[in-house]
Image 1 (spheres, helix red, strand yellow):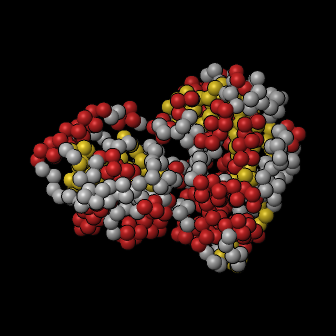
Image 2 (spheres, rainbow, N blue to C red; image 1 turned 45 degrees about the vertical axis):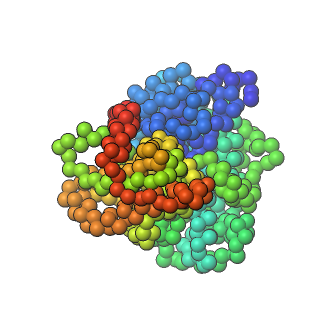
Image 3 (tube, rainbow, N blue to C red; image 1 turned 90 degrees about the vertical axis):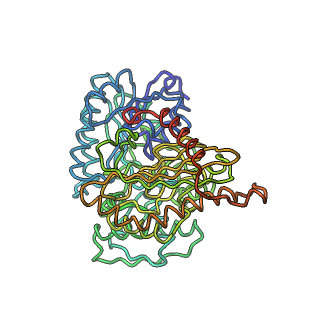
Length: 532
């Protein structure tokens, strides 16, 4: 910790993202006072550093909100970009950059730090690299001393680039690939990216320029895949360059054979169309390499795999915001008046206590599955992938515990009261808005499991969709309710007498107790406006 860092206030945009979520705790450890600007504060509910930072709700698209967030700030970290942006995302990014540039200048900020993309000069760039380059230009012209760090492929547990390499290598014994996989890449370990970001806050104010950053290795993409294979104990993968495999086809291929959705695969693949290596090492004169030197590619892979085995993945691509997915919380029941709403409600009584029942609820999805008709869930996941959705294979970060904002297969954790209720918001492609609630309520010596699927259809297509899948609901949702309660009773610590399941209809008295508990829970929730 430096003496100067203890008196500095830092604003971090993108704190819910892969890099920002790792940078914030390191800034705190270094002694900075940290403010974060986020669109959805509830995503930070369960992060371990939530109570150590000032959380400001706002959007980079709102100039006034950005300006307000910059007041009394010394350093602004700009860590936001639209990896999977649709439509005119370039203009959206430029507008956000203009707002940050203007807000920082007006507030007298002493330093802006931006993480951009490594790219060659004098060639036509993909729209994503072009947009990130233009954002850097706007910030450099803001009048606020700015450092633009231009990084290529970032290797770390949970990073999109690493996960794409991992899944392609794990799944495919033979890799058909575009011929441009022979282009050169200079990957960098996520720990080294964080080293440069953290050190940038203390660079002299007369420095205002872009710097290339990269690891010590320059490799072809095929070499990166086979380097991963060695560290993972897999055979080397033959790679056959195919001239007909266009970037669009390649992104479709990655979308289908890996959990990485097309919207995230596309910008990475497009960046491979050109060599992405450092043009100079000027950064060394401003920020020396970390103690012990930069991390080599193979060691970065080894560290990422160890983090995964130990269950210590800090942040992950899985939890990135899904472009176009609904973000509004489920309205409270009275707000449904006048709207078409379809509900599938299942209730089961079980001898298992509410805490045991909820432990099964919280572990649902990912490798643990959905307790009913796995083939139907798999087919729905493949259908979602085919139309560019996230699919079922996005999985979950922790096999037992969830947090608000976590991705869970093609759902997002919207509300969690541990021991009581879990609500998931659908992020698969559906003609409407969908939620799935699961709750455990103590009743007598056992508990009652309540499972509620809620669907707000959009137009005729939404209504037809609901009735088309209604026959499957009878199988899937009944099976889920039965097997979840059975699993709660059969947990290993139960006695043999308790293992005898008492799954059945809920009595009127128990139903009233459950409704009363749910009403209390509903009253204690924030309103939809406050939750957003």
